[in-house]
Image (cartoon, rainbow, N blue to C red):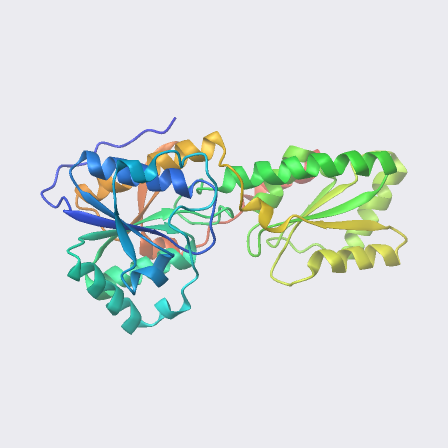
Length: 335
């Protein structure tokens, strides 16, 4: 349950808003869209859904939405509005073109659901073109500053966990070692949560350097002591392509055969968890409330179960760090 703050009244209620999803899709984007649409219509605000993120915005590809537009979408993965990674939006002239599209259609504000890059685009759009924007954290990586939780993270963890529980059956039956790669180029949130939940022997994340030789020593020591032999090592993909395969090759040089299993994009798909549906719905509805209260250039997130706002400038300039004590707990439980 999330506590929704009481916001001050304002005479800045928008007449019409647009909503888009941008960047990598994440489970829960659809419930967020539904939350925005239903809350806006309740307040007498028109809503336009933009197709394919910023790419659709710059060409005016949008459709007015009604209550029926978002019927039966809460259980669907992906995004009803489609998504895109629009590199052209890095150009100020393109952002100005997008702003002109909104103004020509008499749209007063834009709600953007996405990750760090998408929220950066939203911040620049309002700074340069005086378009009111509200951001929602939609990413499975949970690496957005200003919120404890992001839309899609819980589902991604559960999807990875379900796959690893199946892999474990083979690992135990054959006494095999599996290196299971989960998403997370710069962030070890998924890997750490999954590692704790599945009882993995080890967790490898970008935030902490882990040498392959150290892994070999720890595995050999675990076998010698007869403990920790779950057969599962969870590896965040990291910034270097092929990290997990490299680790497997080094282990092989030390007579430790490890099978590589890369979960990949299955973590992005699937029906959103109950947790993500509630989180997304609350954040979507709250975004409309914040717009009506006169807020602009902020991201709506959640801290300590309270819905909060964080300036987009802070969101894109600060890094959300993996809690050291939490990661150390992951290591402790694997001993």
